[in-house]
Length: 279
Image (cartoon, rainbow, N blue to C red):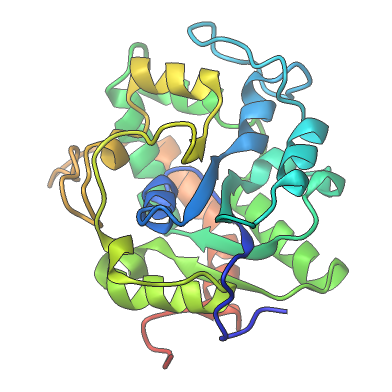
């Protein structure tokens, strides 16, 4: 059960969708050094692991130790004697195999408006080699609505596991980082202070963030997380802000339209904390 009472040490997992400012969110959570982070371990298994359901890109190495069962064991073995533990991962990576979700974690969900997500995705692939529209189609799981995966996972945690949880919108955080980060920490039991609003540039070292070699290699080549690595706070130092008058292909709007009902379900859920709520 989540509580407004702050615990000294907790284990928290935030399920999300790609391009939701979730890596900046994780950087914020771990900024003061009191929290150990895991960056998308299930997604690493899904894209690069030996049992992954998605074909890895040829440009990055495989991850032979990353199976979903191994990730579950690693996370359940984490203790909180020295630091809290925070895991950020993508809901589609566990879609259809919820049995691998680690026990002993407090659940949360990070959402973002679908049109912002898919424009950001297209903008990312426009900076990479190849056709951005085809890259977008190839990277996402085929015939899978990533927002439906997130909404379905909310339903599973609520109705099957009957665990408490919270939902937070990254666009609310961007509007008022101090208020929203405080509300989130209060809900999941992490300790909030102003140190969560500012950080050093770069991808944290392994002792702070557990990150697969494939992910670090992909970041070095493609700069997927450049908005996070170049930032020094929420909205500070972002390298690729939206450009007025940008044009996007039809697939971006089609994906956003298909995702909107599932985003709305999460956004309007009673467990969604927002700027209008009192602490």
